[in-house]
Length: 82
Image (cartoon, rainbow, N blue to C red; front, side):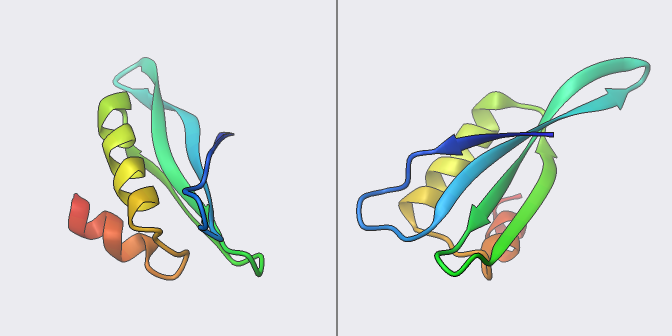
């Protein structure tokens, strides 16, 4: 699994990353995307395999960064978004 670190919004203490993994779908292999948030104290939460769409993960990451989602609330935000 790879992590693509993203630039945090100005004044934001959290670090955001897109998780990129390979997944088998019906004999084919494709990339799946997830999200990871790390707090200033080292707490982190990762949710892999959310989508296979680059457009959808970009939308989700934009929402998460814009609202400065913390590791504690990441799963709730993703569940609501889905």
